[in-house]
Image (cartoon, rainbow, N blue to C red; front, side, top):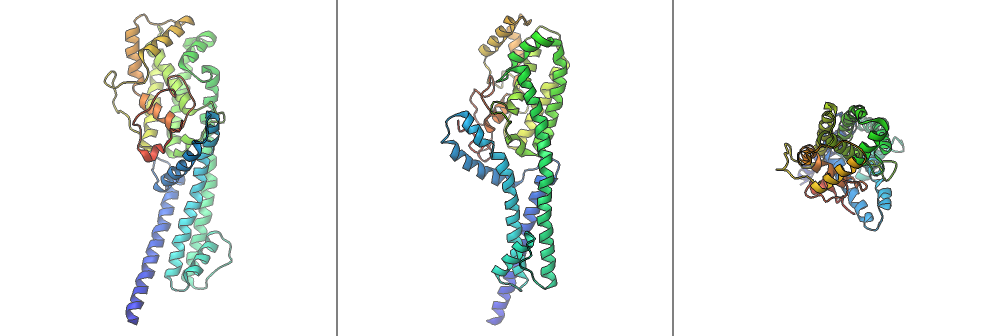
Length: 371
């Protein structure tokens, strides 16, 4: 009987050591994917935390009536989600090392927990004397310090990317109005700069799309960081520029610029690559009219009439112009509306004032539509 109990205890201690190792390995893998790996990688721990926190925020959103109130609350969502990762990782380290300390057979569960916590937070109020336990203490303390150091280094990188993104969004307010629209952007350029100066904007925004593709896939929480002003949004800015380029190529009776086409391609590819991370579905090779778009012919004609009233040359064959515009818009229409919905973007013509249907899996959308 004694030998049987002894064997069971050995088995339990081996199991505790293996489970503890697995928890520590899970935390390290999550940290590497989130803070170190410079590419698109879905981390299940971060995903579970962001989904859970979004659920809590969704409950609070039901009590808020105005967009300004909801925007103010959602401004805390991404920062809270990011900061919640740190205690999650530390808890995994704490529990993992507790099991490993207990598996050595030198301490009770409570003593193992105290030693683990003391080592992780480098408090030094509990320690062991054996060499194996000391090695575990040193490794746990190192992991705790490395986690905090990596987060400190990670945040400046994120906020640098955020600043670059928002600088262009703010400048668009000057060129396209508030809320921004493609017709306002074209009218202002025609009135102030001349439509031939749009070429410079296509190059700027092509580079901007490349930047957000890199930053918003390697730092996926970036899409939820809201602009400093409630009526600004990175996805609304992206949609406005894409619609402006599409209108320029399809409806304006001016020399077509290849830079506008390159800007559109850079834009829809960036949005699609970001959508891949969030499991947002979209047609990979869409063609109009096989794939419908959210803009109606009537809205397009109204935009053309508005531009014409501003003295902007419009093509005479509006039917062909509509076909061309829809052919451009279909490349980004669905994914654009999906991100506007997911990020609870402010109202904007042709983007945030239309319905969105099956766009992403439920655990990724996280009940975003609380409006």
